[in-house]
Amino acid sequence: MPQVEINKEGNIILKPLSNDNSRQSIFQLAQLKGVIFQGILTIFLLLIFIFLITASYFGGQAATYNFLQNNWTGGQDQTNFPNRTNNGNNNPGSWTKFFSKDSQVIASSESITLNTSPTSQIRDSQSDFDAGIKNQVDTSSTPGDVKLAFDLGDGSDGAITISGNVNCQTTDISTADGDSTPDCIATNITAAVSAGANSLTVASTLGFYPFDDILIIQMFGSGQGNYEIKKISSVPNSTTINLTSGTNYNYQSTGAQIIRVPQYTNVTITSSGVLTVSPFNGAVGGVLVFKASGTVNVQAGGLIDLQGKGFAGGSGGGAGGAGGSAGQGGLGGVWGPGENAPGGGGG
Image (cartoon, rainbow, N blue to C red):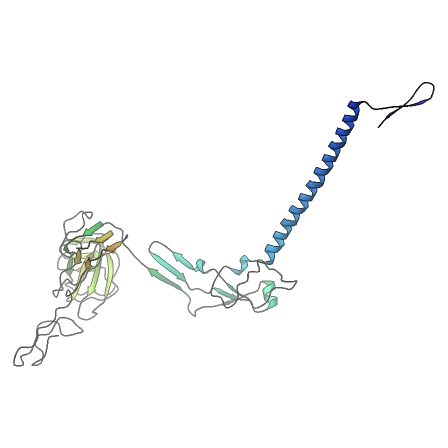
């Protein structure tokens, strides 16, 4: 574009621009166009970003109408979900609210407690639902807790590996218990025990120590089959064992025994191993009990074997009709030797 000038005489003179000025004008014009293009592009991208965020937000909201229906048996607390509308309408009435089932389960290292206190709340109407009004509904007429207890022991007898035939009642298996007496040593009760008693009179306290767990079991006679595990508080003499808590059952002066309960960590019975106890002899035997806080691994071919270790059978009748003797036991026959009717078999 030419440059316009007026001389002293008042004449208009047109002069062409120099090459440098022409280039500068063209460069400035190109810069201006670039700035305008970048601005338009930025605004376009910003509009696209806003559109995507808005679509994502409203699309997500449309997919999250989470209600807990009244035929469900559990789930999260309804109050975790705010009131929402669907196509402009209020939330439907008659929804049932359930507390989270997980909040009703209390787990510890020794038990699981199921809380059965009232947990359901019914919204009776639309107005109740909107106002947050609810009615309690008892799940039981006498709500309470159900506790499932399990005691795997403290592992104080360490880990054991059984190879060959091992009698726990007569063998000191564990090297961690610090004594040389059998792991499952047993003795019989010699004086009647009333429910709630915390002291036992026994034939011998050898092998029983404070803080040992013991199994008390009535083998025959009144209360046959009753058993419980208790902890020893003290052993004051050779015939008395004191307990940390009272017994749950009565025990007779005959037919009841106590057995030390070893508390292992891991128990491994190899393919050639057999873990067993002595047969019941009328006073002790016939029962194997232990705890394991880790794993019990019975390998293929290995056995925990109590076959033939319980009550002894009676002898069969002789030739010519002679009577056989009764076997042991308070239910299947009469304890002690004796004769059945002529020609009869053992008990």
